[in-house]
Image 1 (cartoon, rainbow, N blue to C red):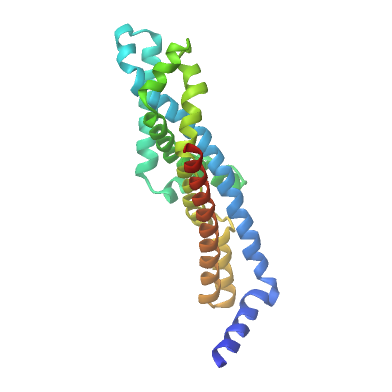
Image 2 (cartoon, rainbow, N blue to C red):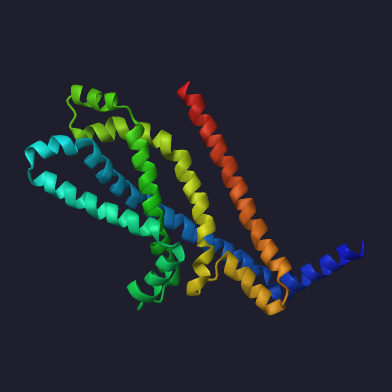
Length: 243
């Protein structure tokens, strides 16, 4: 059992000596903080973009006939949303993070807020497509039902479409949260000591790569497994409620 005693000795040296395990704990909290606030920004931004895009898709033919101010405003907003989606989905997240840090917020000293903003903007593009797909998946008859009740488009969306859409997209939004947790591992590029950076700092101080980086990988894996399990339970409950 020589290997086991060596492992315990290495573990104590890497994590317990000088209380280096605290770096991992602090990094984990930073990772969860960035992820939570970024996904909230992503949901808010994605909802706005998805609403504009789905409104354009469903109403553009009727608005074309009138060509009033609402038509031109909706067309401009739709173009802006398409450009946003194309740029964000078509460029690497790490490049967006560096642009936010070195260009957009070059004078800011709050690295975590910059990371939250950058990941939130990135997440918003993917959330927008999730929500838009959920809205478009609601049968056209539901919109007609809203009109028959005397609702306008916004009232129909709020009272009839969105409640159905939420059930359709909730699992996908939870999966986006899981993806975002892993994406935040690049936060160290702008000097943030997140979970990944914490492991790398320990590696640099101990000259031992296996244990700190393997430990970080295990923590990420456990987070993903727990969240995946919870998402699975949520999907089963939603399917049970539909019966």
